[in-house]
Structure formats: C-alpha cells, structure tokens
Amino acid sequence: MYKDKTILIVGGSGSWGNELTRQLIPHKPKRIIIFSRGEILQIGMERKFNNKLVKYVIGDVRDVHAVNDVVSHGIDYIFYLAALKHVPTCENMPFEAIQTNILGIRNVIEAAIKYKVKRFIDVSTDKAVDPINNYGLTKAIGEKLTIQANCETRDTEFICIRSGNVLGTNGSVVPFMIDQIRISNTAKVTDDRMTRFFITFSQAIKLLLNAAEQGIGGEVYVINMPSFYIKDLAELLVEFYGNKDTRIDVLGAREGEKIHEVLISQHEIHRTQYVDENYYVIYPQLKTGRTYYHYWNQEDYWDGKIQTPLPEYGLSSADNLKDKEYLRGLLKKGGYLG
Image 1: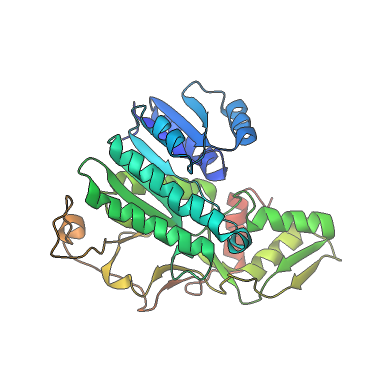
Image 2 (image 1 turned 90 degrees about the horizontal axis):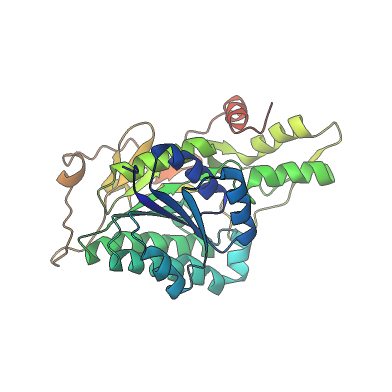
C-alpha cells in the first residue's frame, strides 16, 4: 500500500510520528513528509533517521495556508497525529485545544478533499469516548469531522483509529513517573482504583498501519488493548527504579480525569464488529433519507454479521484487567524494565 507513495504525517515530530516513520521506511515509500511546529524535534528526527526519503516541513495545522501548501504536493496518504493532549492544559486553555484539535483537523480534512488525497487516517484516543474533559471533547469532534468527511467526496477515504495509552509517549505516565522517582523518590498516583489501557509503541504503530490498510472509509478501528491498575504500574516502577525509602503518594483524581477509561461506548455497541484479537470496528452512523457520495450498509463491511463479545455498557478499562506480571512483561517489551 505504501510503496512509492507520498505520505504526510501531520504532527509527525512527536513520539508517535517517530515510530510511525521508522516502521514506514521499510515499505519503501516515495517520500515521507513530517509536518509540525516542533523545530527542535524535527532536527532531532533528521539527525536520527538521516534518510533522504524523509522531508521536514515546519508548519501549524491552525495555519490554512501552510496546510494547503504541504498537502498540494501530491500527497497519497495523511496520518493525522497533531493534538494538544495534556488534560490539565486543555482544561485550563480550552480555546487552544479547540484551535488545534478541532479547527486544525478541519483545515487538514478540507485540504485532503481539495487535493484528492487517497486516504486520511485520524489517530484518536479513548478519551474521546464519553468525554468529560476538553481534550476528550475536542478529539470526539475530530472523530466526527473525519467520518463525516466521507460524505463530501468520492476521492478520499477517511477513517479513524482509536487507541488507549501507548507506553513512552512524550509526557506520558511511565516516563513521568520514572522522573518523579529519580528526582523526589516519590511516585504520585491520583487514585488507587484508577485503571488505564496500555500497549507498547511498536505494537500500536503496527496495528495502526494494518488498520489503515484495511479501512474502506467511514469506520472507526478500535485497537483492543489490555488494561491495568495505575497503582500496579507505580509499584513495578518503584521496585525497579526506587529504593526502600521510595513512597507512593495518592493525590486524588485531577479535574477532567476519569477513574476508568472507555474504548467503546454503550451507544456504539450496536454497530460494533469484533474483527479479531487486535481490533473492533465501529460502523458509521449516518442519517438516512439523504443522498451521500458514500453509501454504507453493514454488507459493505462484514456481511452484516455484527458479533460483539462486549457488555452492553461498552468496553471499559475496568474490564479484563491484567495482573502485575502481565504488566511487568509489557514494560519489559517497552524497554522500561530490565
């Protein structure tokens, strides 16, 4: 799918973009373009990859002219990774979250339609499901904009990939907790009951690429992920990086934080298909009685047979929790435990 194609990774200088670039290079694309506003991060990528296939463009998704300029250069596939994603930041500066996570993705969607990009893949988050914070709300609207865009063109296929936490992303819980232990000899946990979905970087990007190939436009692919107690994560990291005096402090949930995350909501269950051990797929929900360029029905996907081995309330991180030994193995795969 990617051989001899031009691929644009929007917001591509972060952790996801680095791993996605690493896994795309062996597919022998014609070019990979990294579009982001992170100058220092781009320089770091350029030195790390040292590959003429990869081009770096400074720009912001909020800037319509910059977006149109980069998309106009014969792009085949767009991976949309740009986001303001730190929950407290989005809570404190909601309009900034709107500017990037809603208006920014709209700019790129419109450019993809204008320049007839073959496929647009939005990478979304479990926080977009039943959202209670500004980050989740803005990402949920981003999902809606992406799926609805299929109704506006015959030329571009728009799909979403929804994931939970990926071990080791910039500013995420694992490196943050390791830094806490090293600096203050304390690991901070907001609530003993808190659970989260986790997966390693290499697994997440591999599943992202596979789902991007399978999609036909209009669906949301949900990566099936194990879940764990955050307190178990803290205990394992203290065991490895701490000492006999290292404490675990329970602070209480922050504003906008859930005790359990959700990957599939109860409102999506009736149109969710279990694909295999790696994925669920959520069919689009579009109004009937209106003429669309794209017309969907269940037969377009899996012969109309919706089989969802899920509870009626959806897929929560409180379900199918794995034990500490499973989490220990995942952290070892991610390179965080020896």
